[in-house]
Amino acid sequence: MAGYRDPSFQDRTAAAAKARSAALERLKAKAPINPAEQARKIAEAEAREAAKAAKREAVRAAKQAEAEAAAAALRAEAEAAAAAEQAAADALAANVELTEAERKAARDARYAARKQRKGR
Image (cartoon, rainbow, N blue to C red):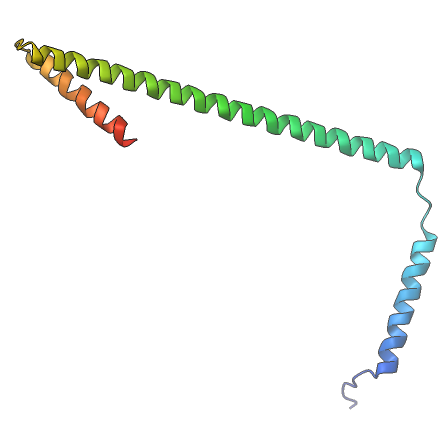
């Protein structure tokens, strides 16, 4: 039973030369590139890239608009909480007797303002 025999250097160089010549023959056998077809493919690729860029820009604009709307909502909420807190403080400063509901609203406003300042 014959065992595995390592190929010699000459065997390896001959195999590489044979593979190189086969690849060269395959390359020579290919049809030449048609300039019109190549131009069409380039135009299609550019059109695809332009469409992708437009889609990326639309997504970016939508995300930016959403972030701006969320920031505006947070600002409005913070302003409302600050106004409620100020109203409660003004009422306390004037020594006006507050009802239970008014005290609860003032406490809630202070809590919301504190939460807003902490960024939650």
